[in-house]
Image 1: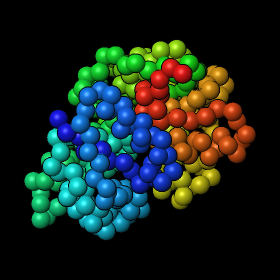
Image 2 (image 1 turned 45 degrees about the vertical axis):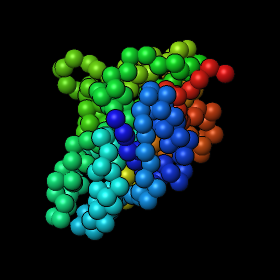
Image 3 (image 1 turned 180 degrees about the horizontal axis):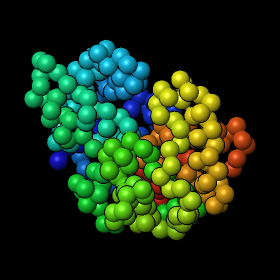
Length: 246
C-alpha cells in the first residue's frame, strides 16, 4: 500500500516532531509513505467559525493531493473527523467521497488497518492519556464512560505495547480539555478553566507526560502547564510509539 501523509498546519508549524515521528513509525512498520509538499490547512478553523462555505479551496487541494493514495493518515483526530464528515466537491464528488472513506487518524490506522500487535518502543515514564473529544466521540477511538458498554481504548491498546511505560489512573478519563478549536478564542475564560481542571487530574496522579492522539488538545494543555511552571510535559502518542531505548 501507499499512504499519503497529511500533516495539519499547526503540527507543521509548531510540533514538527510529531509529524516526523508519525512518518518514522509508519516506515518502521513497512508502510510506503508519500508526502504531498503542497498540502495546507484542512479548513476546519473556518468551518468551526461559521465560514464552511469558504473552505472549498482547502477541499479541492486535499482532493488533488490525496485522492490517488490507498490510504490517507493524519496524526490529528479533529482534522480527520472534519475531512471525513465535510469534504465535498461539486466538480469531483466521487474523488471527494473516496478521500472521506480512506482517511484515518494514526491510532485507528495502526489498530484497524495494520492491526499492530507488537511495537519495539521504550518510554520509561508515568503517562496520563488524554482522550480527545473528536477522537473519542467522533472517530470512536475509545469508549465513552457514560455508556453502559464494554470499555475499549485504541490509544491504550497501543501504549500497552510500549516497554517501561506506566499508565497513570485518572478520576475523569474522558473529560474535555476545553480547547475546542476556535472555542478557546471565543470563550477564553471557560476554555482555560476546563484546561486547568483537566491538567490537575493528570498532575495529581503523578503524570510526567500527558499524551493523546490530537496535538491541538495537547498544545492547549501545554500552554497552561508552562504558565503554571509545571514539570509535566506533553507528547504526541506517535512520539511515544516511535521512541527507542537510549
